[in-house]
Length: 235
Image (cartoon, rainbow, N blue to C red):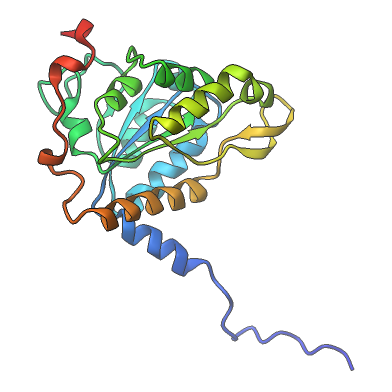
């Protein structure tokens, strides 16, 4: 007997409940999105859009290399907020080190996180605006999620793997990289995770943080940072 055709009016399975849960977790959260140099920066535009649609307050910071791939005006339009491209910009305060921005954040995401950015963070450098802001975030109270993106050979380099281990020990969280086709026409590990996967990981981190403490992670009392301990060469 032939199979009966599917009823077009029958309910269909949907991933909406999971997406709705992620949106609920991120609603009204202050999220910093750092963008570093890499072709995967085009995916970050979709990520910022998803975060904004979820009701998050998104602030984007870009390294000089990142602006060669996607213009700051794109992220400004998607986030509805000014974009930081220099450590010397005073967008929301008179603080040249953006301490207030870091203190207020509930979560920071770096996507794409390049090989160079991994190395900078692992060695404590703060000479671009993305790393500078991250240097002022207390990871005991505010999670930082890194989404690596690079060529498969760059990802497999001993230095990169060493830096990943160091950053994991230092309290950074990772999503990806995925295995797949890359812009260099190679296939392998190093492809940045898709925006939906990054969004889900971000929601999970925020949820874990909320479950651990009844105090809002953006509370300044939980974010005490010594100004003199951050980038003294920029005083």
